[in-house]
Length: 84
Figure 1 (cartoon, rainbow, N blue to C red):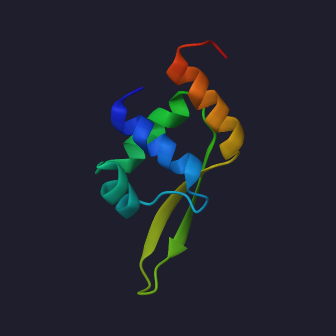
Figure 2 (cartoon, rainbow, N blue to C red):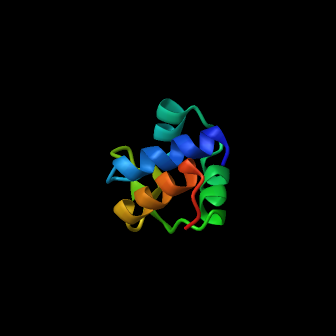
């Protein structure tokens, strides 16, 4: 897993409101959130996506994990090199 992808996944595990492109840029340093999400999904993590509206009326995509606790355990196994 790429370092930026791991940062995005780690952020999503501890942020119940999910991640947006702006929060990905400011907290994880990635401009291409949709690509990082694709990589996370390719690893087998379940990611939900939806839209939310800002106070100025802009629609922004938000991604979040469906079961953050289970995904956190899986992430730790991947990082430690153990098989599922």
